[in-house]
Length: 184
Length: 209
Figure (tube, one colour):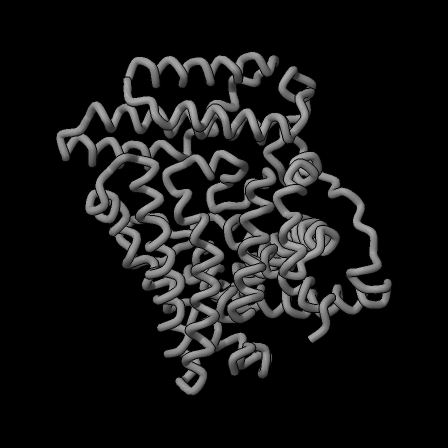
């Protein structure tokens, strides 16, 4: 794959993540009133669709443009302020979530796509992301670890739904464009 | 393209971006160790005053803190519960202060200037094969194509509604991704046809409100 193509892919996928964040709140019924945004769905999909390295770079580019002052995070947030907020750990963890999702996809090459994408999304997009997010919250809010963990536990069911949706989307995209997912 | 930049000419707009970033880092260092509620409250009010000095309706941008409020409420509730209401108050005020300070830089600095000020930070990326030119091109492409893909999403949504589709809008992400992949193939071909990413010169991103 040539360099231009890789660069454009990374940039356009970053733009997809931005578009997902600008969507009005996603209507995912089951989550018990917790607002769900499509943005973390974008991270999972970045790892699945682009693989670990390009996925990481794409999400990192997205974060960079947010830092430069574009209000592209879900809910129209952006600018340097988000790096001083309680959720900074999550934002820093975004690219690593995509990286691990991509790595898991490579590991699960021989597993059926839906299952592989689901497991990868849960490991990358939930476990890794929270491993960054919770310490970030502890640092920013002087809550203790269990307090911070409890405060964001409400988002876990929604995130599991997102992992399921990411797997469904990956399946549909691969059906429409065979060969498009790097680990397949 | 949307930006948080506030087109105006206040004293803060005139300071160089790099200097503002250093000031921000320095003031964060000063604010982090503060544990007294009164002192923290004073620094928050001082920061809020800085918004007033932007002139016009600069103070209205204080409402950028709004999306943070539910979070702050939860944090405060947890502190209250744990019997550390005082520490909770301090950390909530600290969060608001640091958030407002950082946003002040974003409000008064153009994206192009911010990008230029960050160049020294990106310099080491050359060692892993990411040239400043490629990075600038990637930023420009993303900034240009984000609104394009938002429009694609909007059109998909309209078509979905016209067909009587209701909930489950996540299904629209499938065609969104497919269109983005097709678009990226076209853009990559166009880029190669114009000499490739190593030849093309990147104009500074034009950002309008």
